[in-house]
Length: 333
Image (cartoon, rainbow, N blue to C red; front, side, top):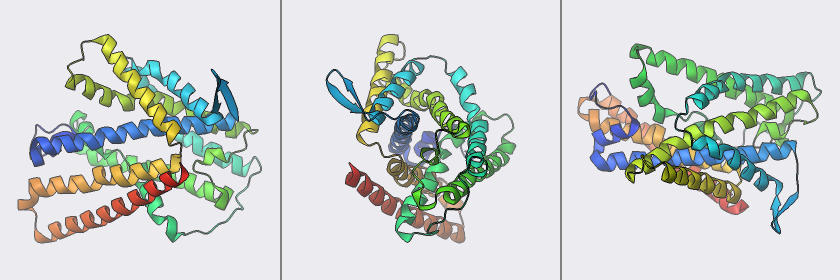
């Protein structure tokens, strides 16, 4: 971005490095990542609402629908009107409060273990080599967001503070994720589920608060995640001025994510797939390739060797993680 002041978004970097083809590839990966993250939100909603209000089956027009699938549909209906909004400013402010709510979630989990009687006595096998690729993929997913960095950088008044902003964000995220991981391991050990909230005793007030906060935040973020995809489709089809067609496009997007969430309701495996295939590619592989293309001539030999090593390692993680996650998804369908 220092080389070319016209670069303002992540796809712009791809265009600078590889032309229109580079822009198209980065845009495809960007929108696919956003789409699957939105799908993950619906899976998360279905799992946690079903935890609070377990329903084995529900009959709709003679069709039997299991509880989780029903709640995915309910969550889709709730978020649907928010995707029609022209101004997402209100949702953005509510979503920003998710940082504080994340730490509230950690406190509630700690309270369940320390005060509500669960305790921190469980143990399990600390390192499982078999699940290492899945773990790395999930960690990659947790630190996704690199695609927003160019937009964040260009929107800052004092861009010199950008490295400090990133450092604070990554430290806060690491503390938050690490706390949940350690607490979940000490509380439930080998019995820990894909989401620690699914282990919490719902009869406890602190557990209910934790689950409620887990379900509220995705509802506010869904429209923010889907808006770039809908906007791209509308601009490509020249439909931005047609309000009715815009609503139809956004409705179809919500319906499609609901179908995917119902068909592949595996929160952990879908997360691993996003982390290995999309996040590793978008956050490591493609930035390295673009950097070499744009600044390769000015980079010294040691720098090039380091970047190539990162590319090889990231590619290995992407291939192994993607294969493992897809295999797990296919096995459990």
